[in-house]
Image (tube, rainbow, N blue to C red; front, side, top):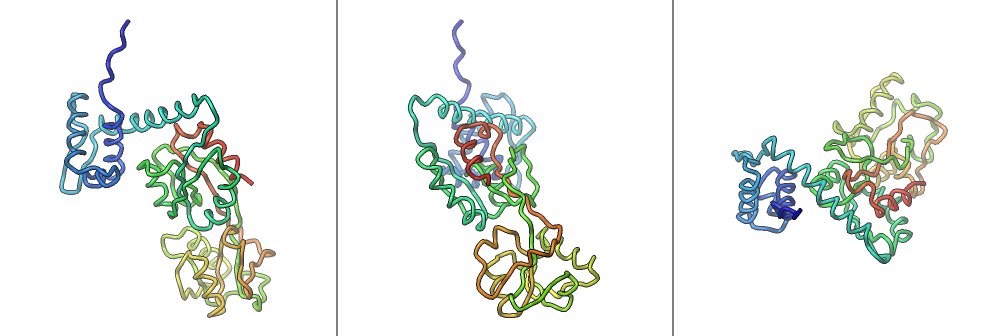
Length: 287
């Protein structure tokens, strides 16, 4: 029995996935380095083949219809499946290129050491992105994987693998003596802002200890935090990855358990999770 010709092309599915990720024709065009007209033409051709509307245009952009969302999800899986198939049938050992997004301390502490160990089997291109942006890039197929801090919700049916659970510790100037959290009640604090789960959790710990922290700066940049601790004799909380190279005059109070932790996770699309390159990456990143 003869095979039926393929009804569409992978490129049209890639265009639909880009529209789903960006929510606009212009955004999809920028992602794919196409003109908006070319994106619209691919979408129109795909709708003719599907026999139904896949997207609805409005002043806010483009919203996929229910059939469009189903086709975009299936198309993304199919594109990843094709890539996986090519990786698995390679006759000779070859280099697989992966793009991975990660936040700064994960790049320094995890990816840079792993990069040399992975070559020549896996060649990493590292993209600096905070966890939320990294996940958006992953869904948009701009990267193949992301390292997140586990403090942000992972949606879109992505595959998550736990790499480590690290403590979040109180950080102070070396001259400050701290035995209990209450000893910092009169101190000036540096914490993450309203959107920072770590910052909010630290505030709750302070309140449970009977005081409201006097926050003089809101930041999650550990370099800025170190500068403020030295300049203003402030105190803060930082995850272990940010404490691999603490400047002189600053110390982590390791004897004080705040019962705060952060999950470090490797996140990828489901169809890529079982590929040799991603599995090798995951094994290499684990302690």
